[in-house]
Length: 404
Image (cartoon, helix red, strand yellow):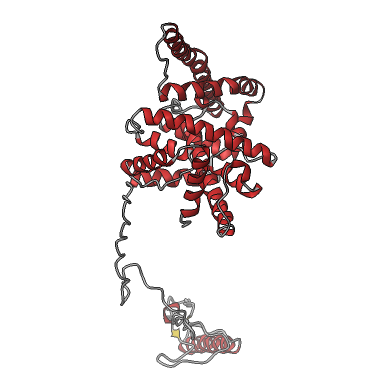
């Protein structure tokens, strides 16, 4: 090939490159670079490739679709809230003016501070008073397990096994309660009666102690409740929680769980306090008039209140309620004689003192000491002479009681 031919070939390649560059710009495609295809001539002369730029280095050409490098994208600015909410103080931040320390509560005279364990047990009993039948059953079972009355549930027991375990625990508990009445208590009651019979045969004074008298009374009450309870257990055992809540007098004392017994006593005290408030209101209305003399002179409202203070049934007509009040006053007269003969209750324990006072309608604060309770019992024994005086003591206590 001649030099002229080689020159024409180079010009044709150069013009082709310029046309390609122009068509790329007109389409809006910004090519970074463009490499020419090497052309080999017949005499083995190779044309060097020429790099062409669509833009001049250092300058930018505006196009319809400009490709922006990723590294040049600026992050979004944080959103500024024009009305920010007040910042909550952290737990470590202390207030500028800390609250004053709690003041120590001053105990009133003749008032002792109860231990944390006693207050916790009292709170637990108060919370259990408002439980339903099924919730109270679960609570009673848990308390019986905690106190060792029921055997604990073995680990890994299935639901069916747990139900069978609970049924066995209840069955053996009721069995031991009934056996205690029919065997042990029957023998003990027979021994007391035989001792009295032998003393009378010898012409000696046949006197029973207060504990023997109260045991025979409790034994006779349990015998009276025994048959209905056995029928209920055999036919409809699921009704026992309802009986405990709504008719606790139908159950023998040996077939009550400890938590059930405590719930019954708490409910009885609550009713006695409410009837003391009713009696106080009724006595305030007749303050000018003379105090009623005798049970027969009580008004229907006041007789209902006095029956509630003595924890006797309050249903029925007024004459029936007055008959129950007279019966209870005669029982208190006999018990006063036994207490006076045995040192005016000096040998009684704290729980026995509380029980004796509550039978007389005297509901005291649980924080009182044993000596203070004994002083109240001495006041009753010294002032109670007959049925009318005992009724006057109950009315006087209800009238002077402060309702907090």
